Image 1 (cartoon, rainbow, N blue to C red):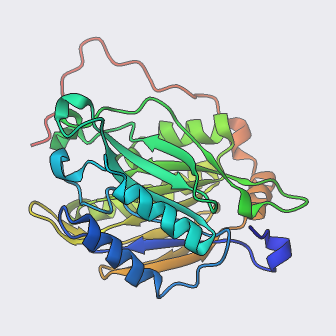
Image 2: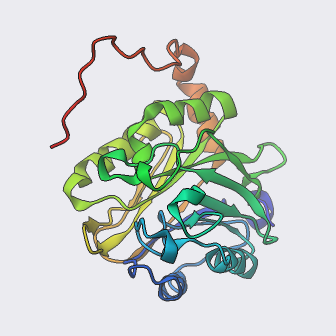
Image 3: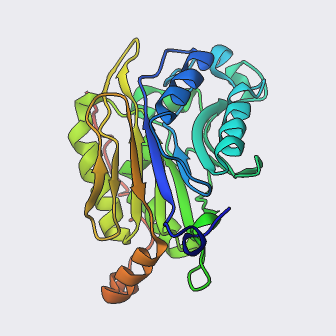
Length: 291
């Protein structure tokens, strides 16, 4: 797979910002291929795709469910072709009915074509009714980006996340403290109406955990919403490593695990963490209106 010391290059993440064709997996697979033609993907790199990249943020699981494995096969194909890691969002369910318990997942495939990890979105977007179709995940996960390992540096632990998860710092803190995550790989369908939240929260998650934030958003429109892209990569120090505008494109950035270790050693703020659980819900709390 080629380590940084062997290849003379740290691994890169390639964040694929595409205009997703509504509920058309074959078309979206082709759009990803065309965008990847612009990227210089090397063995052991990471290709990162948005939430539900093959279908858009649709609750119509009769059309979006990847029960046939079409989108999984595409992820495997990309991983084997480029000899790299690929993380992409899809819908999975045992059947095409809501009663089967659909999940909004991020699937990670390694260079050999095997599934490395599969994360289920912990925070369905209840304000938009996502929780009525998709069951919430229960486990914070990481996977090892083994291509980043050197003789002196272990592999980088990467925590996958999905869209609305970005608003919940507990997830990212748990990944950092429990699993030593050094990077977060988040795919989203984040609407333009809250775009300023997207950028601010992505930067905050990197700063507070002293980790890379790799956040890829879609662009374009679907039948309900407009998306502004804004795919962003943030370093462990909170510097912007790269950022896209509203057009389809690829953001390619180096991800060096040594930078995580160096910054955490120089500024060991994580050692001062005292509160690791969310506060208790007030007994007489009033539901917040989202109108």
